Amino acid sequence: KRLVVLVSGSGTNLQALLDAIATAGAGAYGAEIVAVGADREGVEGLARAERAGIPTFVRKVKDYGSRAEWDAALAEAVAGHEPDLVVSAGFMKIVGKEFLARFGGRFVNTHPALLPSFPGAHGVRDALAYGARVTGCTVHFVDDGVDTGPIIAQGVVEVRDEDDESALHERIKEVERRLLVEVVGRLARNGYRIEGRKVVIQ
Ligand code: GRF
Image (cartoon, rainbow, N blue to C red):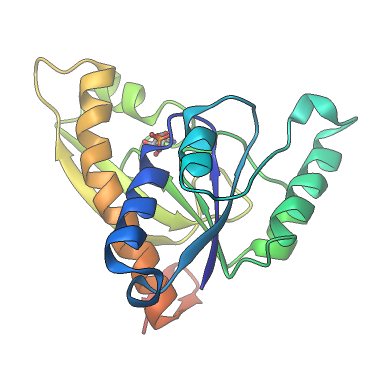
């Protein structure tokens, strides 16, 4: 299967996928990353792709006259690589109607909280501020809401009294990277069905 991965930052989730595929081999893993896209230049995630010899593309919102035009341009860039599955690994933009029309049902996101708790761009900070005793990460299909699509898998992480946002996020990311590698591989190898809120992986 062909994967396109979207990043906005350090790309450690992307790196986990790259390492898993390099270790297992694309055949055994069930997928290869054919391109990496970002919404901004110069992020470490793009550098990781370049080091792995994987084509990259950038589509910046401010380069377009409207959000809808950016969304269509992003969808076009992704479509050019003919992906079977698109993975948002720390991609910090909300895609729109055009993107979902083309990739809905095969667009996976990873979120650093136990959805439906703490959706949005500050899930780690919000869980900490709320005083949650456990939090974690969620891998889900993207729908037309923010972090509201059908959940595929979740991982639980204890919150420690001494945690600040970055310490907690790092501990979440250790679980998140393993969860994302496991889920993407299973989706790619086994195929899946989405039945309402349920995801059935064959
Ligand atoms: C991940 O925890 C992701 O869930 C969140 O931002 C982080 C991105 O990390 N949206 P990285 O860019 O994969 O290192």
